[in-house]
Length: 244
Image (cartoon, rainbow, N blue to C red; front, side, top):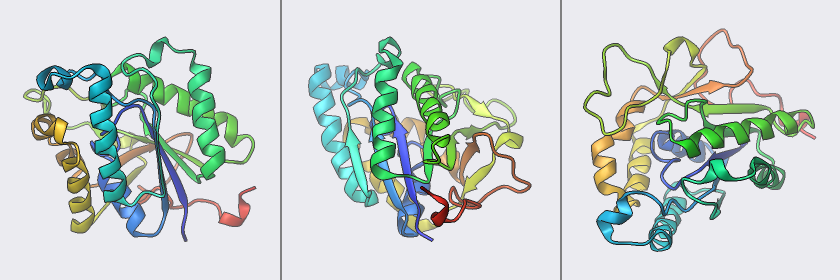
Protein backbone atom coordinates (compact mmCIF):
# COMPACT_ATOMS: atom_id res chain seq x y z
CA UNK A 1 0.00 0.00 0.00
CA UNK A 2 1.44 3.34 -1.07
CA UNK A 3 2.01 5.90 1.69
CA UNK A 4 3.22 9.49 1.89
CA UNK A 5 6.37 10.28 3.90
CA UNK A 6 7.75 13.76 4.63
CA UNK A 7 11.37 14.19 5.72
CA UNK A 8 12.25 17.50 7.39
CA UNK A 9 15.90 18.37 7.91
CA UNK A 10 17.81 21.61 8.45
CA UNK A 11 20.64 21.20 5.93
CA UNK A 12 21.47 19.84 2.50
CA UNK A 13 22.95 16.32 2.84
CA UNK A 14 21.09 15.56 6.12
CA UNK A 15 18.71 13.34 4.16
CA UNK A 16 21.61 11.34 2.73
CA UNK A 17 23.98 11.14 5.73
CA UNK A 18 22.30 7.98 7.00
CA UNK A 19 18.63 8.00 5.95
CA UNK A 20 19.47 7.69 2.24
CA UNK A 21 19.03 3.91 1.84
CA UNK A 22 15.65 4.08 3.61
CA UNK A 23 14.52 6.85 1.24
CA UNK A 24 15.70 4.81 -1.74
CA UNK A 25 13.76 1.77 -0.56
CA UNK A 26 10.62 3.79 0.10
CA UNK A 27 10.67 5.31 -3.38
CA UNK A 28 11.37 1.89 -4.94
CA UNK A 29 8.36 0.45 -3.13
CA UNK A 30 6.12 3.15 -4.56
CA UNK A 31 5.74 5.47 -1.58
CA UNK A 32 5.54 9.22 -2.17
CA UNK A 33 8.63 10.60 -0.43
CA UNK A 34 8.81 14.35 0.14
CA UNK A 35 11.71 16.41 1.47
CA UNK A 36 11.71 19.81 3.19
CA UNK A 37 15.15 21.31 3.84
CA UNK A 38 15.10 24.44 5.98
CA UNK A 39 18.43 26.07 5.04
CA UNK A 40 20.81 26.12 2.09
CA UNK A 41 23.69 25.18 4.34
CA UNK A 42 25.87 28.04 3.16
CA UNK A 43 27.57 28.66 6.51
CA UNK A 44 29.39 25.33 6.43
CA UNK A 45 33.13 25.47 7.08
CA UNK A 46 33.68 23.82 3.70
CA UNK A 47 33.07 27.20 2.08
CA UNK A 48 36.44 28.42 3.37
CA UNK A 49 38.19 25.56 1.59
CA UNK A 50 36.40 26.51 -1.62
CA UNK A 51 36.83 30.27 -1.17
CA UNK A 52 33.09 30.95 -1.27
CA UNK A 53 30.82 33.34 0.62
CA UNK A 54 27.84 32.05 2.58
CA UNK A 55 25.49 32.96 -0.28
CA UNK A 56 27.77 31.43 -2.92
CA UNK A 57 28.11 28.19 -0.95
CA UNK A 58 24.36 28.09 -0.46
CA UNK A 59 23.86 28.36 -4.22
CA UNK A 60 26.30 25.48 -4.79
CA UNK A 61 24.53 23.27 -2.32
CA UNK A 62 21.13 24.15 -3.78
CA UNK A 63 22.33 22.92 -7.18
CA UNK A 64 23.67 19.76 -5.59
CA UNK A 65 20.29 19.11 -3.99
CA UNK A 66 18.61 19.27 -7.39
CA UNK A 67 20.85 16.34 -8.33
CA UNK A 68 19.81 14.55 -5.13
CA UNK A 69 16.11 15.09 -5.87
CA UNK A 70 16.45 13.39 -9.24
CA UNK A 71 18.65 10.61 -7.92
CA UNK A 72 16.08 9.50 -5.35
CA UNK A 73 13.05 10.31 -7.49
CA UNK A 74 11.39 12.36 -4.76
CA UNK A 75 7.71 13.19 -5.03
CA UNK A 76 8.52 16.76 -4.02
CA UNK A 77 11.45 18.77 -2.75
CA UNK A 78 11.27 22.15 -0.98
CA UNK A 79 14.41 24.11 -0.12
CA UNK A 80 14.09 27.15 2.13
CA UNK A 81 16.67 29.79 3.01
CA UNK A 82 16.43 30.18 6.77
CA UNK A 83 19.82 31.07 8.34
CA UNK A 84 22.23 28.17 8.46
CA UNK A 85 23.63 27.79 11.98
CA UNK A 86 21.01 30.34 13.04
CA UNK A 87 17.77 28.43 13.51
CA UNK A 88 17.99 28.72 17.29
CA UNK A 89 17.83 32.52 17.01
CA UNK A 90 14.52 32.44 15.13
CA UNK A 91 11.05 32.60 16.61
CA UNK A 92 10.29 28.85 16.51
CA UNK A 93 6.73 29.58 15.47
CA UNK A 94 8.04 30.71 12.07
CA UNK A 95 9.57 27.27 11.48
CA UNK A 96 6.51 25.54 12.92
CA UNK A 97 4.29 27.32 10.41
CA UNK A 98 6.68 26.32 7.62
CA UNK A 99 6.59 22.65 8.56
CA UNK A 100 2.85 22.64 9.18
CA UNK A 101 2.23 24.15 5.75
CA UNK A 102 4.16 21.32 4.08
CA UNK A 103 2.30 18.73 6.14
CA UNK A 104 -1.01 20.16 5.00
CA UNK A 105 0.22 20.32 1.40
CA UNK A 106 1.54 16.76 1.04
CA UNK A 107 -0.61 15.00 3.69
CA UNK A 108 2.04 12.56 4.90
CA UNK A 109 1.28 9.44 6.88
CA UNK A 110 4.76 9.61 8.40
CA UNK A 111 6.80 12.66 9.42
CA UNK A 112 10.57 12.19 9.79
CA UNK A 113 13.33 14.28 11.35
CA UNK A 114 16.28 13.92 13.74
CA UNK A 115 16.12 12.25 17.13
CA UNK A 116 16.34 14.47 20.18
CA UNK A 117 20.16 14.50 20.26
CA UNK A 118 20.34 15.53 16.62
CA UNK A 119 22.87 12.72 15.84
CA UNK A 120 25.79 15.17 15.78
CA UNK A 121 24.48 17.61 18.39
CA UNK A 122 24.43 20.44 15.83
CA UNK A 123 22.20 23.27 17.16
CA UNK A 124 20.17 23.38 13.93
CA UNK A 125 19.51 19.64 14.27
CA UNK A 126 18.20 20.15 17.79
CA UNK A 127 15.90 22.95 16.66
CA UNK A 128 14.57 20.83 13.80
CA UNK A 129 13.73 18.03 16.23
CA UNK A 130 11.87 20.35 18.60
CA UNK A 131 9.95 22.16 15.87
CA UNK A 132 8.89 19.03 14.01
CA UNK A 133 7.81 17.29 17.21
CA UNK A 134 5.61 20.25 18.18
CA UNK A 135 4.02 20.28 14.72
CA UNK A 136 3.44 16.53 14.88
CA UNK A 137 1.75 16.77 18.28
CA UNK A 138 -0.46 19.62 17.15
CA UNK A 139 -1.52 18.09 13.84
CA UNK A 140 -1.92 14.59 15.22
CA UNK A 141 -4.78 15.98 17.29
CA UNK A 142 -6.41 17.00 14.00
CA UNK A 143 -5.96 13.46 12.68
CA UNK A 144 -3.50 14.60 10.01
CA UNK A 145 -0.51 12.50 11.06
CA UNK A 146 -0.02 8.95 12.24
CA UNK A 147 3.69 8.60 12.98
CA UNK A 148 6.77 10.64 13.88
CA UNK A 149 9.97 8.77 13.04
CA UNK A 150 13.23 10.08 14.47
CA UNK A 151 16.47 9.19 12.69
CA UNK A 152 19.38 8.25 14.93
CA UNK A 153 22.53 6.12 15.06
CA UNK A 154 22.88 3.15 17.36
CA UNK A 155 25.10 2.95 20.43
CA UNK A 156 27.89 0.41 20.14
CA UNK A 157 30.42 -1.06 22.54
CA UNK A 158 33.76 0.67 22.93
CA UNK A 159 34.44 4.08 21.43
CA UNK A 160 33.62 3.82 17.72
CA UNK A 161 33.82 7.60 17.25
CA UNK A 162 37.33 8.05 18.61
CA UNK A 163 38.85 8.56 15.18
CA UNK A 164 35.90 10.33 13.54
CA UNK A 165 35.86 14.08 12.82
CA UNK A 166 32.64 14.53 14.83
CA UNK A 167 31.50 12.37 17.73
CA UNK A 168 27.99 11.06 17.24
CA UNK A 169 25.15 11.12 19.76
CA UNK A 170 24.04 7.50 19.82
CA UNK A 171 20.84 5.79 20.96
CA UNK A 172 20.90 2.54 22.99
CA UNK A 173 19.80 -0.45 20.88
CA UNK A 174 16.85 -1.13 23.17
CA UNK A 175 15.32 2.26 22.31
CA UNK A 176 15.27 1.63 18.56
CA UNK A 177 11.76 0.93 17.25
CA UNK A 178 12.45 0.44 13.53
CA UNK A 179 15.40 -0.60 11.39
CA UNK A 180 14.65 -0.01 7.75
CA UNK A 181 16.55 -2.66 5.84
CA UNK A 182 17.52 -2.18 2.20
CA UNK A 183 19.02 -4.00 -0.74
CA UNK A 184 22.15 -3.39 -2.79
CA UNK A 185 20.27 -1.26 -5.30
CA UNK A 186 18.96 0.99 -2.51
CA UNK A 187 22.47 1.42 -1.15
CA UNK A 188 23.74 2.24 -4.65
CA UNK A 189 21.06 4.91 -4.98
CA UNK A 190 22.07 6.38 -1.61
CA UNK A 191 25.73 6.39 -2.66
CA UNK A 192 24.80 8.18 -5.89
CA UNK A 193 22.88 10.77 -3.89
CA UNK A 194 25.88 11.37 -1.65
CA UNK A 195 28.06 11.75 -4.74
CA UNK A 196 25.85 14.68 -5.81
CA UNK A 197 27.45 16.63 -2.96
CA UNK A 198 30.69 17.29 -4.78
CA UNK A 199 31.51 20.21 -2.46
CA UNK A 200 31.31 17.80 0.49
CA UNK A 201 33.33 14.93 -0.94
CA UNK A 202 36.08 15.17 1.69
CA UNK A 203 33.53 15.22 4.51
CA UNK A 204 31.67 12.23 3.09
CA UNK A 205 34.87 10.24 2.77
CA UNK A 206 35.90 11.12 6.33
CA UNK A 207 32.54 10.23 7.88
CA UNK A 208 31.51 7.25 5.70
CA UNK A 209 27.89 7.82 6.79
CA UNK A 210 26.44 4.70 5.16
CA UNK A 211 28.68 2.51 7.31
CA UNK A 212 26.57 3.61 10.28
CA UNK A 213 23.41 2.12 8.78
CA UNK A 214 24.81 -1.06 7.24
CA UNK A 215 22.43 -3.22 9.29
CA UNK A 216 19.41 -1.05 8.53
CA UNK A 217 18.53 2.63 9.03
CA UNK A 218 17.53 3.07 12.71
CA UNK A 219 14.61 5.15 13.93
CA UNK A 220 12.91 5.90 17.22
CA UNK A 221 9.12 6.13 16.82
CA UNK A 222 7.69 8.87 19.01
CA UNK A 223 5.03 7.80 21.50
CA UNK A 224 4.78 4.25 20.14
CA UNK A 225 5.42 0.84 21.69
CA UNK A 226 5.90 -2.27 19.55
CA UNK A 227 6.58 -5.83 20.61
CA UNK A 228 9.02 -6.36 17.76
CA UNK A 229 11.37 -4.18 15.75
CA UNK A 230 9.65 -2.80 12.65
CA UNK A 231 11.30 -3.26 9.26
CA UNK A 232 9.78 -0.16 7.68
CA UNK A 233 8.35 3.22 8.63
CA UNK A 234 5.01 2.33 7.09
CA UNK A 235 4.47 -0.91 9.02
CA UNK A 236 1.50 -1.12 11.40
CA UNK A 237 -0.08 2.16 10.24
CA UNK A 238 -3.87 2.61 10.20
CA UNK A 239 -5.60 2.03 6.84
CA UNK A 240 -5.46 4.92 4.42
CA UNK A 241 -9.23 5.21 4.68
CA UNK A 242 -8.80 6.23 8.32
CA UNK A 243 -7.16 9.52 7.32
CA UNK A 244 -9.33 12.64 7.21
